[in-house]
Structures are given as C-alpha cells and as structure tokens.
Amino acid sequence: MHKNPRKERFYQKHKAAIITQVIERRRQNKALVRILLGGQCELCGYSRCLEALEFHHINPQDKKFSVSTARNPNVEKMFLEALKCSLLCRNCHMDVEMGHVVPDWETVNVLK
Picture 1 (cartoon, rainbow, N blue to C red):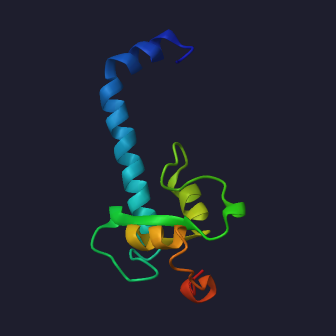
Picture 2: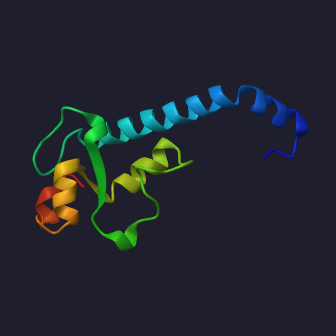
C-alpha cells in the first residue's frame, strides 16, 4: 500500500502489468545468475533447461536468502549469494538433499 494516493491509484490501475514485469525481471535475473555460474549441473553436467537448475547452499550457515525465491534483490546481490551455492539440476539437488549423494564440494566448486 502506497502512502501517496496518486501512486496507489496508478498501481491499482496497472497492477497486472506491474506484476507481470516483476515476475519476468526475477526470471531473467535468475537465468542470468545460472548462466554466470556455468549454466550446467556441477555434478552431472545437465544443461538442457536453465529453469531445471537449482541453487544449493553448500554451507547453510552462510545463507542470507534463497536465490530461487528472492523477492527484491538485484542481480548483483543474487549473484553474490549464488557464489555460496552449487548449481545442481533438480535430480542431483534432491539426491544431495536426501543424502543419497555426498559431493566433495572442494573438487566440485573448483571455479569458486
């Protein structure tokens, strides 16, 4: 809710377009960060669909926010947070989360 009535009226009038723009900007920012991190799963090399690549925080204590669900950060903040992550496809990410695969992060993240 805006304190300024003119801004509030503008927002209400253009709400759908504004929301669409925000969603698209977030999608583009996440895609750019995925590309900057190599654009492929660090465990299996999957790279067909950028949206299937997820960010896995290697050290959860260092996590400031979730890169995938970040609401407001700009692309620079997202990238800095993503540097604390390993880029994994959904299958490898679930294997890591469930403990089926325990990667040696020192060898996986040689570029970081």
